[in-house]
Length: 173
Image 1 (cartoon, rainbow, N blue to C red):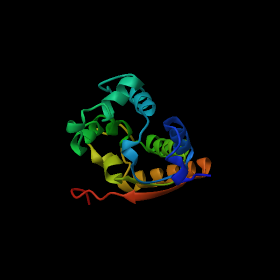
Image 2: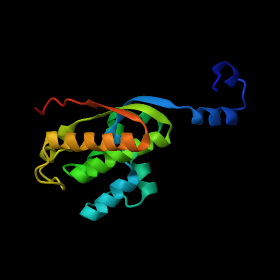
Image 3: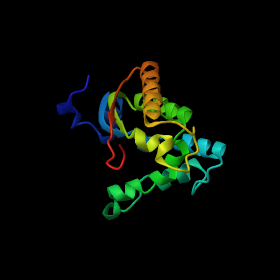
Image 4: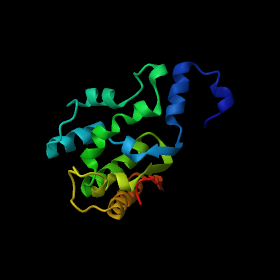
């Protein structure tokens, strides 16, 4: 079992291994910021949506801020990539459901037992954009429903607990 007091005396590599084995709780995770690069690229190709890069390594570099100079890291910088990949899933019930299930799998693979995931159904429904590539009439409620179904299936399949936090966006009703 884990003993925090003793762990501080372990060699660094052993500490990393010990920490990697711990079960976790995540309380602030954005669904739309947790989409798999592989899924986005595959869906974009299927739909004929052009992305700025077309391989997983480059896509991850494009959307992640970890290689950006610390002085340039900000919420604004982090959010710059969202308009690139959100249109790939926006208004697409099957894609949203898939992403919710994959989110659960990824969390379970990282040792997360309980997570709270936040998202704005209004930004993922067909009504969020005139250029939606998905179902013509996926309403806000429809987007919410397919995400909840995907999270329920993923939770059951991967043995984790997931709760939703809905984001309210002021310009949307």
